[in-house]
Length: 441
Image 1 (spheres, rainbow, N blue to C red):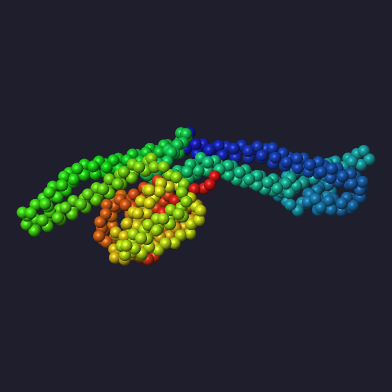
Image 2 (image 1 turned 120 degrees about the horizontal axis):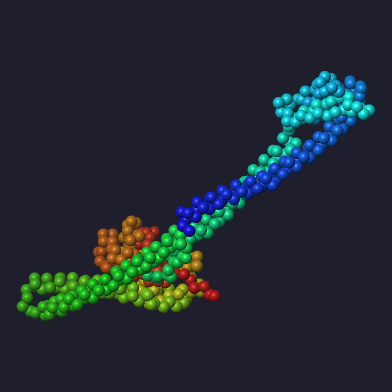
């Protein structure tokens, strides 16, 4: 059943159950209890009135004592009493009630003495709510209805939580996990309502995203392949022309400039080719558990020597123990290489200080590399990992294909990790990525 019908039906059912149970409770509990109280009070009143007539019969014919007795009786029980002669017409005594206007019951009782009727007593008894427990009944009814309503609303809330909230929370969690490099099993649902439709549409959208990603990679690979053949011919003819000795200096300068641009194009095509090969390899790459501390130390030692030779300095700090991560070592080393290369090439300074930190946090191993270069504008930080994105004026020469950090993102996502950029406290760019720790079973 669709939610547009199910939800109104549930509220209708809630109202029906509330009405039915309320009527049943009023009929079985409240009304029965009130009638029982009324019956008990009526029986008590009959006993009191029988006692009163007997007492008046004993006091007959002393009218003064009868008068005093009836006044005390009326005042104590808040009754309206009238004592009539035996003919029932001539009143001997009238005692009004203190609660005039609230009477509800009038009864007549004969007073017999020595086998004959000597008086008639008219009793008008006022209606008092406390005698039948009407206030208590209304209070109990209100409390019962509130408890019933609270219980039904709680059940409805739990049902809606299972029906709507949990599936949407699961979908939101899946949205956070979506990435193009590490496809997950499709999100399925057997429901036939709007939530089920949403799950199916989400699955279709996810499949279209992966299909579009594959098409983009294939397109880049095809363009790269098609450009390499003519570019190889161009470079070959340039080398042939440069061997000639009958050219002027100006012509040779032009040819050298053309060869330089051709070499740059070849480097770009090699970057594109490497990127597409990397994307294709990521589908079938096998990850194996590996201790992270020895790996990190070996990477640091490798780049300490390399950066020192280029005039840069690498500062390393790590707080790692026996943690293991599941990785493909070659691809992860490529991530380290791309991040370091990005800082060196685009830092904009002849001498850089790179700070490399590794630590364990919340079930993940985090790696953080910061430089003291020119940095990147904050508005550009979220775009750094997009394919073909480059920051020209703020990161030095602006050379590059815009695929280095995109490749890093692909590899890290394939490893189940996250990567992001931030502005370093030293003024340059910071890159941090984290990988989940392998828990021993």
